[in-house]
Image (cartoon, rainbow, N blue to C red):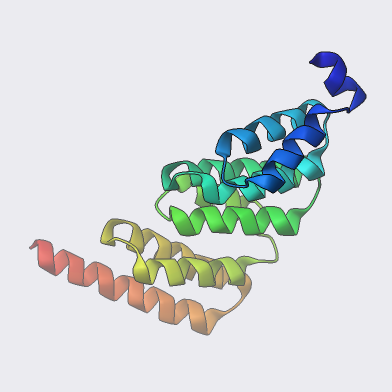
Length: 169
């Protein structure tokens, strides 16, 4: 098998044909992804990973999107696509701190966009996550220079915290 991989022959083409015939088999996509990784064909690996995502159980999709984002950023230097993959992961799991940290690490110049995402997700999230998302969104609006938006967002965060405090009293 190693000789086939090193020559770039047969195995990849066979698996690609199998995927075209039946694109619903996770195991075929995983084998194809492994071969593309072995020959360092990062663009094809990213393509396979994208096509694999809908076949994964919801619980595995976040980690798969994170892996895709890393591949897009580190191997293909496609920061726009990596950003989109990270945002998609965050939308699936807004409570995961590591997702927010990863986005904030690459958010320079996109603070307003990330703030809007946080505020949107905060409006729909469970209460224990909503407060964090709204506060981070408000802080990012400040960084982005949208002081009116930040003031309104902070007012909502404070009112929410006051309501929570009264509810717990």
